[in-house]
Each structure stands twice: as structure tokens, then as C-alpha cells.
Amino acid sequence: MRFREPAAGAEARAPVIGIVGCGRMGTALAETFAAQRRPVLLASRDGRSASGLAERLPGARAGGLERVAREADIVALASPLAAIQAEIAPRIRAHVVGKPVIDMSNPCGHDLLGHGSAAELIARLLPGGAVVKAFNCLSARQLAGVARGGVTLTVPIAGDDPRAKQAVRSIIEPAGLDVADAGGLPGSRWIEALAQLLMRLEKQPGPGDAVGFRLLRLTACETTWTRP
Image (tube, rainbow, N blue to C red):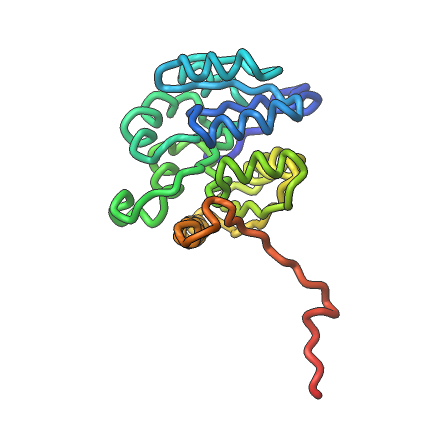
């Protein structure tokens, strides 16, 4: 199933972004989009954290999981892989057909059991959705720092549907983030591996979750090597 064409008149409005999970990362993501005056729908397991967050963010509303998946144009899964597998995917499968679904998870190796990557596993769980890997190489603190005018960090993305990736890019770049396209969904394996490296660096004395990823794009003259 490919990314469906937007309904007539939909291009004139900002896409509604549904965020499933209101932990640290889901909250930071909601705050980032709300600061841009984007419409946001929030869902959480207990409902209370989504309602509390929606009350303090302009343009945000809370709802049940199925409603958020049904009414959002782009669905971001800010939830652990285990929760997506066991509870979220079965309930939203019918509501994300033809929609970009952002996988933000960072699984442990034993979570995958030969599936390649978390994003590829979620694509199998949501066969009608256009899964795009993104945001997993950022911490909540880093995302909040970018929103306050901090260093521009790079968000690698991967997905099989070019239009779904473009839709995801269109909500990432206005947030002050750079996008690096890693190709099709199998590229998510390398993005998840990069996140594991960054988390390993964060555990070293000093940095904490201040470690981030920024892709340096050299100009043609900078890449030219001159023989002495």
C-alpha cells in the first residue's frame, strides 16, 4: 500500500499530526509542533498524560488511540517497540492505511528476532501504512534545544514510499532540523545502529544525552584532494 493522494483541499491546510505516546520524546515532539502552530492529536495509554499535555499546548487535542490514528494525516509512534507490537499496531492497523507512519523506536537486539529493524517489523505489523523511520537519533532534550535555537542536528530518515518521506521531511525541516535520506526502509537498520552508537557515547563520563548527530556536507572544492 502506497501513500494515498491527499483529499481535495487538504494541501491548503497543515497536516494533522497524531502522536501516540506522551512520554519525554512524545511530549518534546508535541511541543515542537505546537510551537509552529501545527494541529496535533495526542494519545497515551492512560489518557491522562495526553489530556494534560493537550491542555497546555495551542492547537493540540487529546483522544483515544483509534481516533487519533483515524483523524491524523501523519501518525508518529513515540512508544516502545514492545507496546507497538502488543497493543498499538493491532488497534490502529485499519486507520493508517495510506498514511505516513513515523517509527521513532530504538529496540534492543533481542526485540527484533530476525526482522532486520524495528521499522521493518512495524511495516509488517501495519501493512497498509507507509512507515518512515525518523527521530530515533534525537533525545527529548536535544529536540527541545533545537526549538530554542540550538545547534541544527540531522535526522536520518528511511522509507519505501517517496511521497510519505517527503511528507515527513515537510514537518521535520521547519522545526530547525536537517534531514538525511537513507533510502528505502532497509536503511533503517543503519539508522538504528547509529542510534545505538550515540547512546553508547552518551554513557561515557560527561556528555549525557547532549551527544547528537550532525551530517557535514562538504562542498566540491572541499572534497578535492591536491597532490603536494
